[in-house]
Image (cartoon, rainbow, N blue to C red; front, top):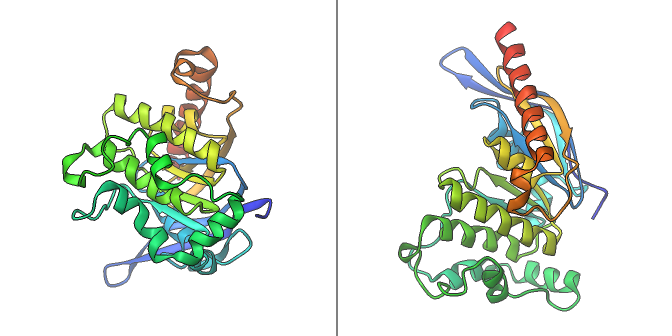
Length: 270
């Protein structure tokens, strides 16, 4: 994997509105994400966070600028199964068990499965082991309708990690969960990330979530969508629950909130 897992160079994305209008979702966005790092994108609704993720995933084309993933175009990276995506909702197949849901991508993408085994040297952790690490060992044979929303989202994360992608894109995967479940899933996500070494780009509205998870926090502002700050989060890992009560953690929360306020004020003044 190249030193730059993701590179976004002067990307602009515009949507038509009505007969003659337009909405600039992203304007002259530059972003570099180093391989193996965990980077969160935070900002108010409408600032283009999810649009940026879709452009990097190759689900939308930019109107200007360029995007590369591990030195490839997004389409090439997606075809090679270098990219994984975790959406806001788990999107599990209701007629398959949890284990069969998370195993399905490897079965239908056997070349990517071979690539994952070759990279890990010994085949890496299998799906049963990943489900155990995510706390799902007791429900792996249940249907999605028989488990909680938090468990469904954990299964979706295991499914995405299962092919060992170089880059994992996550679009507010914990937004619908209560705070206690959210914090538990954050910890399990960090455990999986630490073991599997993917690059993660994570969209969130939560300041504490961004600080807890990330090596860097990207702050965005709307109208037009743009990056206003990239903040380094220099906190020790692993980041267990005790970190959330530390003075250092709260200082970073205050810093991110201050930069978000600055982004909002700059938007209001423009």
